[in-house]
Image (tube, rainbow, N blue to C red; front, top):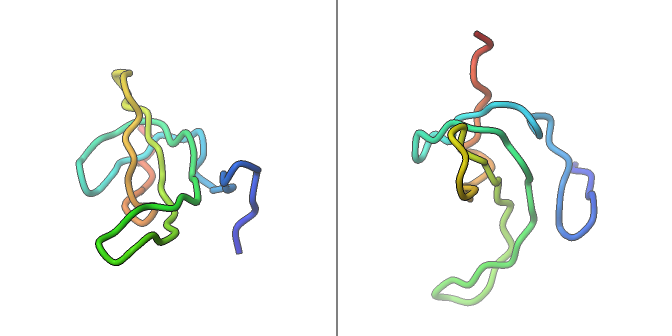
Length: 74
């Protein structure tokens, strides 16, 4: 079971670590995991989304938590 940190944020063992989003190939730092309500064609539903800040900087990428994998230590 996850621990809620407030405002929908959840604890995650990779928070602050370098990760890769398998869906896009983006590599960066995991900044947040958030429980969010999203609209779908059949109505709203709740989903857990991860936010990754790209290593080169810029806008954080939202992806499914299941797409987040740690980068191997160099």
